[in-house]
Amino acid sequence: MGWLAAGDGYEVALVEGRVTARSTKGRTAGRQLKALPRALRDHPEVDRLRRLAEWLDRHAAACVRQVDAWMVSSLPVPTGLLARVWEDEAWRSALRDLVVVGDDPGEAGFLRDAGGADGLRVVNLDGETVRLSPETVTLPHPVLLEDLEELREFAAELGVVQRVEQIHRATWRRGEEPAAGATEVRDFAGASFPSRFALAARATALGYRVSGGYATCSVRDGGRGVEAALWIGEPYGDGAETGGLGWQGPDGRSLPLREVGPVAWSEGMRMGAALYAGRRIEEGAGR
Image (cartoon, rainbow, N blue to C red; front, side, top):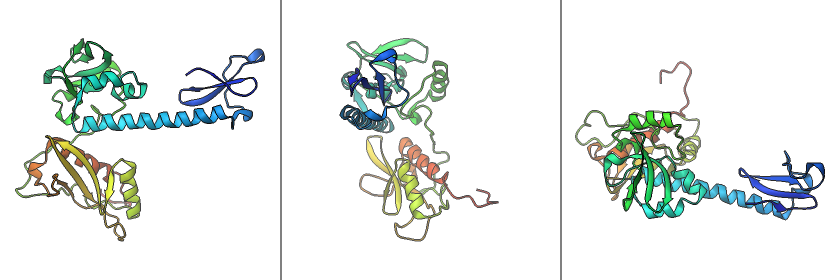
């Protein structure tokens, strides 16, 4: 966006998301000002640019949320769709440098370009730039990436910074086989908070949904919807302590831990750990 006339002797524009002014007269003509002059603060063009900046921020956040949803659930995304949205800076920022996988699971690479007519341009683990042109690609959840540690090391060499947390996302893998019939994990139970409101507010701030007495997160794992739910107390109760963590299938049935897939397990444990980390620690307490 170019500079717009605003008032007598000034022009305004959005520069790095902020309304900026410059003088058009005298010796300082063309020089950007450090602060917006008082005479421009209520100018219609300034107000319009402020509202545009707010919309751009919301749009960028929405793009990140959508790409995160694709990644968490490892949903197939049409390459044609990526090509269409790539020209949008907000979409490009959210997608750039994410690990994508085409038809061959061994074709994983960091996405560098999706706007060309000949497919996607990615950098693979050999450091080579290759073209992929499948009908769809996935942005795999990191727990599904066999070469995750290699990808992390290579990303550090490339200076990769991902807007959507993927390769550096905290992951949990199920260890020993759970007991038959077990439906609950107690690793994050007993975390005390000043109030139930504080615990619910932490869950919401971290992007989780609060429903009834639970903090929840929903993912698709193995083609089915699964919801992880951590007990945080009744909405109007006195308790402010976390309870057990469990998972439910699309029919609302509690899933035996043995039936919980790797993505649902990792995301549920990630939620539990994030909430547990905000607990009130009593002086001298061991946990």
